[in-house]
Length: 484
Image (cartoon, rainbow, N blue to C red):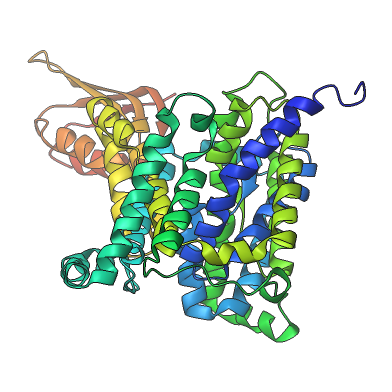
């Protein structure tokens, strides 16, 4: 015990994390359109591979709801055999970014873009899982999912089996939300696990006609990509998906690490090493043909709150997942799919930062607008392009705010008109600057003082020179430019 002074706390915490992770691993896999066992494989790798590597000591990795939409689109477009190749390439890209010490730069990403990305994922996830909760097939696109809801609701209300399926899904949501309020030891059981267990027991006892998880066995589900599968990397769309996987998984993991660091007083995250740990985990997941992984805030916060002290807790949670997958895989076949849909609807709802959006709207409406536009873009277009739109808006907003320039015009009625520019004169403020200068009297000399400018970009400098030449014509008093 002297060698492992915190073993008791870490073992207890690992069991809690295992119970939280189990239904989420299965649910994320089913929602991603892959065998349920692959979700367990990713959780196992997250514990036994990423968990052993340096970086963050207490955050836990595994399949995440945040990548569900992107994985589903990739499997739907390129097939399940291509998933391993995409995840493998994304993992290698993460390793390269970590080796180049790019991990800390993810902390510079706009928080509004990240929250908008998660909100967009949440909206698409909720829309898709509402169909699954009713036992219906969801349309492919995010907009089609939302527009098809009235028709899906009519179909669900017209059939007894769909109503029964919806009831199971709704019950799972209610249990997930309310279970933690129970007093005593019962309340310590994770709500998602309680919802799955209760839904399984009720549907089995009452013979409720709902779809259940299809089980193929752990070894049957693991399909390492063969040499022929790597040909998909010649497709530009696949390469874009690889980049999206790597960037989104990295951003979510490192933001999660920052959040987890605020929950405990232990060692701080080393971001470049954590990025490499995530890359190593995704590389292994790709070689096994499994789902991509990220650090998951739900499991990580459960780990901290359960009293974990070292990385042993997250490694042990992977051991428990491995034992379950090896010894009890047939138990998955009893789990009703509507219950998993309900759990993921709840997870999607938690991805939408309602309180944060209200706070942003009151204090920083520009950031709130970026969040909303990013989320809507992901729903309307797709994940990768939606994030790019959000990043572009963030860059434009930052450039606009950093290009504040102040123009002071002093006209004493006689002598030259004095104009003082201060701040940052960039092309974004050029229309305002030229409008002011061109409104000056044409029959008076002008003294243009630029000494107080912090920055003068080439576009503004050129435009000022051209204006000065035009103003200092044959019949017009000269312009005197004063610079540093």
